[in-house]
Each structure stands twice: as C-alpha cells, then as structure tokens.
Amino acid sequence: MSYSSFTEFRNDILRYLRCEKEYYEEDIKANERLSDAQKIEIGLLIDKAIISSVMPPFYVLSVSENNTKLRPGDKVMLVQNNKKIEVRIVENSESFLTIESVQQLYETEPYRIEVHEFVVLDPLIQLAEQIEDGASGSFWMELLAGLEQPIKDGYKPIDFYSVNTIPMSLNKDQCECCKNVLKRPTFYCLQGPPGTGKTDVLATLANTYSSQGYEVLIISNTHQAVNNALNKIYSINHQLPIIKIGEELKGEGLDKGIVVAKTYNAYLSSRKQNKKKKKEKSHDILGMTFHAAVINLGLRTNRFLPSIILVDEAGQIPLAQGALIGALGSGTVVLIGDDLQMPPIFHEKLVSDALSVSIFAYLSSLYPEFKNVLKITYRMNNEITETVSKKFYQPYGITLKASDFSAHRTLEINSSCGDKRIDNILKSTQSIHQIDVSKYDSWQDENHEEANFISLLVKSALNSGIKKQNIAVITPYRRQVKIIRQFVISALGSNRDIPLIDTVERLQGQDVDLIIISISITDKLYWKQQEQFVLNPNRLNVMLSRAKKKVIIVGKYQIL
Image (cartoon, rainbow, N blue to C red; front, side):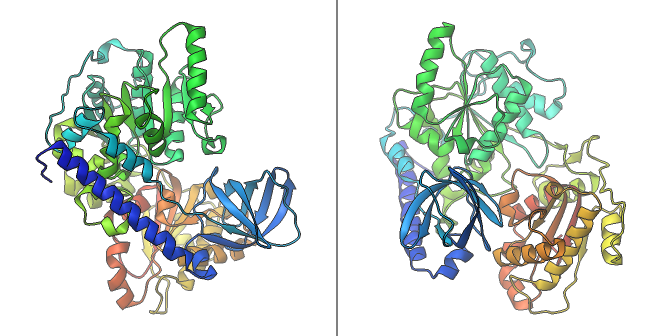
C-alpha cells in the first residue's frame, strides 16, 4: 500500500468501514427472509425452549438444538404467543440456556429465542470521520500510511534493571520484549505462538507500568480475552487497581478482586472519588473491548488517558480498525498476538482488500525491528511442538521448542474399552494419530461413521479418568458438530458430561489434554471444493496447538 497524504489514508479507512457496514446490513436483511430451519442452522433462532428450572429473575430453559454463539450478557428476544420479552443470557450450552428476565416467565408453552443481529461499525466510522490532520490519532494513521516513522526510545523510558516487577521466571525472549517495551517506543509487536506465555509478558508490562505511576489500558476484540488478561495481571499483583468496563455478566470469569464498572461513567465517578481520598496520582489498569474503547475513549473528551495500550489478540483486528487505536490517547501501543493463528475478523466480501490484513501482521512486516517472537512453549509436548513448528512456523524462520515443563507430557490411560483401535490410540506413546473409520465415500459436511467412532473415543477417555474439560472435539462444519453431539450424548446416556464439541473458532485461547478432530469429508469432489478451507494453515494451527498431550485426527484425507 502506498499513500501520499494523511487524508488519502483516512479516506481509504472510511471507504472500507462504510463498505463493511453496507455488506453486514445486506446480510441481516437476507437473514430475515430465511426459514426457521435455516435460522436454527446458522444460530439465529432456538425453537421450542422449555423452562425447566425457575428462580426469578433467573430461568433455565432446555433446548433441543442450539447453534448460537451467545455469551453471558448478550441480549435476546423471548417470543411466546406473539409476545416478545427481552432477556439476558447468563449461561449458554448445547442443551440449556440460563437467562435473566425482569418480567415473570411462565411454564405454559415453549418459547422461541430470537438472536438479534446488529451492526456495530457506526462508532468506528464516526471516530474515523473526526480524526483530522494534526489531531489526536493522526500521527498513528500517518505511521501506518508510511508518512511518519516510529521511535524505539520514547519520553522518560523505564530502566529494565531498576524495577522489581520483572519475574525471574521469564525466559530470555520474554525479558527481551519487556526490556524493549519499557523504553516506551511508539509501538511494539509481540508474537506469541501457542503456549509461549504472551499473557505473562502482558501482565508483567501492565504491572510494571502501573507500579511506576502510569495508566494502563488493556483492549481486545472480546470480553473473554480482556478478562483473561486482567486475571493474569491480578494473579501476579493483588494490590494493583484493576477495573473492567462492562455489564456485570460480561465480567464472567473475572477474579473477585477485580472491580467491574457497569459503565464508563460509573468508572469515572468512582475514579474521581478515589483520587480525592488517596490524594495521589492514580495509575489504574483499565480493561475493555476495542469497540468499548472507541466509544468511551475515542469519541469523548473527558476520558482516561493511558500511557500504554496493550492490545491482546491483535492478530484478529484488521488494519482498517486498528488504524483507530491512536485516537485512544497513548504514545505507546503494544500489539500482542500471532498472525499464524486465527485471522482478523472482517466481512468475507472484503477478503481481497489490502486493509483486511491484521494490524499486527501489517506492522510486523513493515517494521520487523519493532518485534519480538516467543519461541518456547509451555503447553505442548515435544511431538506436538515439533509438528506445529515444522508445519506452521519454520517456513517463517521461527523454530518452536517445548519447555522442560511440558516436553514429556503424555496422556495417562489406565483402563481398556474393549475396542482395540481405540485402546491402541489412547494408550500409545505417540502424540499425533490419524485414522480413517469411514466405509462410505459420499460423506460431506456430516459423517455419522466418524461421529460414532468419536463418541466411543470420548466415552473411553472419560472412563479412563480424563475430565471433560480436558477434552475437545473439533470439526470444520456446523452440521458435523450437531451429529457428533448426538452420538456422544447417546453413548454417555446424558448431555451433562459431554466435553466441548464445536468449530475451531470456539477453541481460540483454550488448551486441553486431548484434541479430537473430525474432518467429516469422504466425497472426492466435495473435498476438492473444501480442501482450501479445511487445510487453512491458521485454522489448522489452532486445532493442533490447543492440545497439551495428544491429537487424534479422524478422517480420510491427510491434513498433516
């Protein structure tokens, strides 16, 4: 990309965001015309939800099919006899939903649960429109456009050797990154391949900056990623003033020592009072989603002014959105992510647009001297690490190594299930297996033979003492997710003990002992159509690298 002026680049950003908004609005209108069955399939509708437990204002609803991606705090519409009631999600699982409703609900008839689609790009467009040449955020845009150059040593750098907040447990690469970021550069990129401790570095940096009297902002695309980062920070220093912005349910999973402010205004009010009481400069660590930061910090004048912004999962933020980070008011931006894992999130019609590249990948490529790579993984054992390294990282000059802590991890199986194939796989010292169990060559995005075999694998693993939270079953296709769940529930005789069974998107940021991958496809022509999708290296990387001890691939076609 080449730009001759700030205005040209800013206008290109606006072009991209406006196009994306238009595309999403077209999708929403098209989805409104879908049949109920189609809406259920893509996760926009749950039909025949039955109240099974009541403890007002909380209600548990049993569901037969749930393909939604709803998270705690999300709002949905409950419909019964043409009456609509807005409720909030408390917990979402495959077989039940826990909701919060201010109106009393009755167990008379089943409910429909409608997922409301909306476009959240208006604040981003508004912020891009108000960034003028010379105003807050313009230097960041000029940097991205190649019109300005970053600096490595900023104003009042922090001496790495004079602070006592750098843990002795950090390895050489982690320390090097901290040392470079404490120099207060314009920006810095930290690439953290699977299990390499990027969150430990984030927490160390937040702790150090805050302890030195600087305000810290933590942002990411999702509440869960923000929560994980804040929890890690709290775990290394309970005394830090850590605040999460968001509704209470959006703070699910946060340590109780972390303050949750329902709104940004509520935070500002409490902050003002605390300053009066303490009579000292505040050095808060504030966490919120990227979109919340755009609204609360980018579009406001009365705001929190961070000295450093730590952007987690930066590989999922497209350049067009990342170009707005400079307007959040910090002279140092640290982008933490891995452009070899899940790609940035944008509308599929913009896949060939140059602004769809992640902000992390773009800056890493443009300024490689402003980047550190972590190369020691504390998650995967030797065999899985070597496979992941060779297939996904060595082509880019990065060699991963398993730490002494994780290198010799093995799956401990003490019992037999009677099926020799399953026993051999589970008890084998080999960490990566692929097996074809399908006799028919016509399976496409659902495969009952694979689903049945996987149900036996899951049952055997559970019976051997592996906890359900240490097992994950992953497949590229929503239809196959549904079929596998049905077979697993049937094999276990209950839907309460099933492990995570989903597409790879749900697995980002998690790790388990055992990963089972269902390829599903046996039809030759369909494989040719889907091969590029199934073998996408970013998705495959996430699938394989979530496993600490063993990966079992069930499928006809080789993926490694």
